Image (cartoon, rainbow, N blue to C red; front, side, top):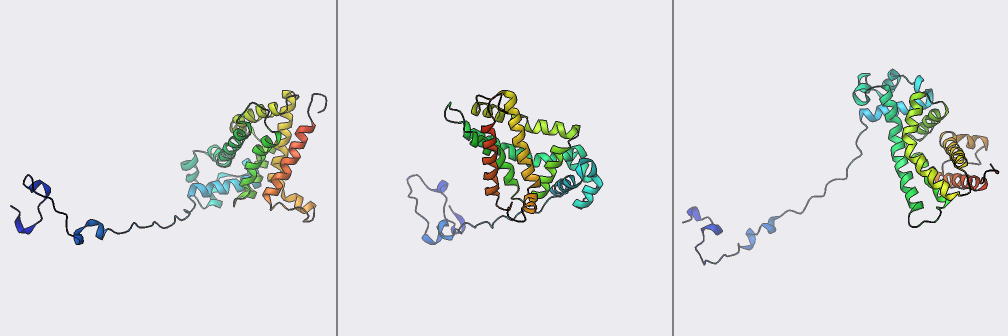
Length: 254
């Protein structure tokens, strides 16, 4: 027996009884609300960690690692001194984080592009493709808001590295150097291993100067040259380095 006129559930029906559909006005689909569309996600505000990294990158570019004190960095970031130890453990940890933030994604993209150059068959990889895979990813960073500080920071690191910076750079680039040197050796079969590494070294120099000091060409040329078109700058750099690599082959031609 069902009290208070409630509709019987299936478990209460006698064997063989028919199950009738609920009237249309009780169909749960009739009252189902359409799915709500979530609002577009907003860009989250910079965290204290990000603010410290931004300030450190800028000050290291301006003053060098030794000149950029933890106190100056935290003041520029609007943070307290304890925040550096909390987020990074030490100044050394902060410096490492500053460079890893940029170099890890850059090197990941370099290796992805290099894989595209060397996949598919056993033919010698295109020299231009290899050069483009190395020099174009860091140029993409220049499209960001902190392009100039990143460029100056890298120039400082490459021009006057102390022991800490030297070890950090060797660690950061170890896989990249090995993979690209091997690919360049295949693309330049008549070149010695020594010659390949010298050419790799010169490519790094041209790229680093373009990233860190590219604004000077605008001043020297009185505006004839512009660094604002990064795609054009990148292609000029690729053609220049590729031509140098291809011209200076052979033990006696260096």
